[in-house]
Length: 129
Figure (cartoon, one colour):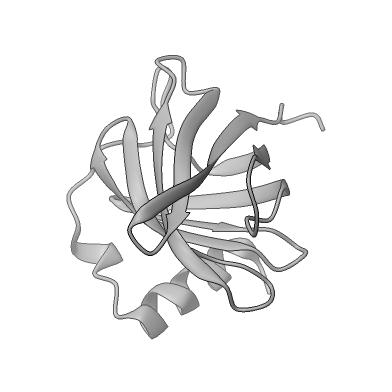
């Protein structure tokens, strides 16, 4: 199943209004769109480190790691994404990411319940990799 189809299927299952949300970012020069492949590392327990494929449709962002980690979030502004994550064993929590001005990296934190338990750092993989 293609990533784009997977995003649409997940959005439909989650009841996401992807098609109706206003646009913050598109794939344009200088854009902060998250769509693409990212190397993601995390400190702390339970969050899956590795390569994530992100798809952004308007305000909705979905990230998936082939080993089972998933992220579902919404753009709060053009450079902030907040949402939830689920690990391969079913562990869940929240995250908050802040994109760098150049759109090539992000930093943030994640947690479970109401408290932070680690940090997340992501770097966009070049298209040639």
